[in-house]
Image (tube, rainbow, N blue to C red; front, side):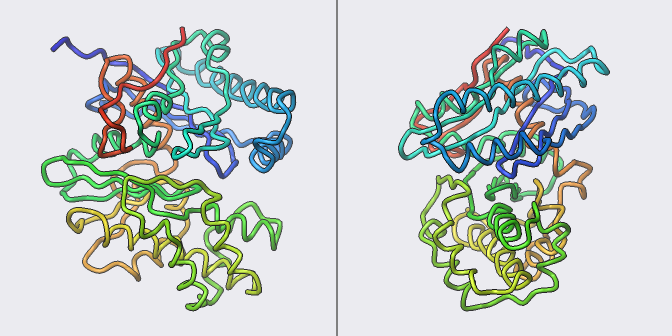
Length: 362
């Protein structure tokens, strides 16, 4: 086997919560992570956030000219952010670009993501790996979750079995067994159902620190209705999008602001625990929460209350940054692409074969 090239790689992610870009620099050969070199956050300005929200809400009916203008604005924001990082770290020699997903319906072979990879590579003068999901979808996979291989790399010195759960707009699980075997799928709702509730009823972007949920009351009848969503009983592999639970979220209407936040947060927690109990091969010793959800103490509290014989941790307990892991995963996958190693497998995305995904732009 030829030797693997080590890269100082920058990863860039933009989640469905529309709060901004997360960037991270790691040194890796796509198997081992040798160094984590820095994390960066670039909040979207109000205009870009509002335009992205419009694109999400109106897709696919929005006209192509408007879509192109928003993509150009998003790309320009990414270029400015990347150039700022490269100015302070000239040794970075690869970019893993996650783009921004507008619509993802793998069962219908639909994936709309924005971000001009060619322009980013050209203007930032950096080798770029983008469109990491396309080849997986063409191979019959769902194009997600993609971070499982990176979670496995981070788990080399963690006792197994272990489960990682990335709580973003939706929640995605990675199971790693005693012998390194992996399984990955979306568990269900994530921050989107909470954020949309507080945005609609309090004009807030999020329930910061879970302060509304902790002061509210969980309505068990509404929670039970939410938990009957058909997605939760569907066997993996499976992928949700943040609109998957819109029909059930209407059941929150009529609750107070605080009670709605509490019940929605409990729904996220119960969905995660149900997925672990129902679908992973062996109950894990530890469940490691990452993504924005790890910063919600009320969600973490609910998870701990609902777990039995499992230790609920966050990525920081192991020296990692919860917020940066997705961006790091894109950097890691970009290196794997350049070293001709698989970026997804049948047991992580449901693809028919293992896939070396990503397009390279120079």
